Image 1 (spheres, rainbow, N blue to C red):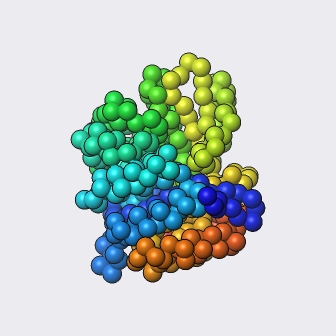
Image 2: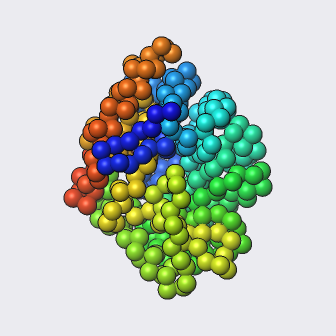
Length: 326
């Protein structure tokens, strides 16, 4: 088996695969005006998705996360998950969701082969949740998390975008939640994108704000596991769950990068904040294109930069998180 390796000796066993840009929530930090439909866009078909997956598997990928937009909006989401899940080489098949269908669909999705899930809950306060997302569904989403645990998802994470003056006072509420619930709450530092500079300047809060509180309370930073995402994880012996921090502005954040991205229209993104997307869709039209596809993917690793340049205000071509499969 080949292995994807870049010029900085980083390996890439992890693929984030977007299957749609559409989202039904209107989160203030991503799509404050809701998703604006572009009739010219056609998202990847099932056959194209599987040709991509087959190529990446042969290049050493064993972890895939299905993203969006909101991936579960696609009517064929379960079919896509099942197709990918049938690949024995994929030992971790995850997805990221706002949880709006989770309560009803958790068992179906687990049966399809999905074994890890990230759910966005940016506040444990129902009113704040509504203010951030545009939806009054916090309790419904929390019930979905309980269902996911019940049906056997092995890795359940809650994503919280840290917002200054909005939810940065809620650490106690999340700690209370993980006291007896075996989930990982991951605080994600707000990132500047192409269209949110004013918002970013108003609401950005360093992840150190949470880190310092955790350390003061006796939480301990864990060693990063092979194939793990970018979170720094903290645990405490008195808690069943854990707290993670994703801090893209921190020193050496990119040294452990292990993931590549495919957009919903088939572009390869070497970095969430890269300056270019490499079109692959023209090589996804027949099975006999696989060798060319693998060669194209491998060649692009020569151009992967050592780091993003977010600290310089360079957000690349990423307009918002939904457009790239953040």
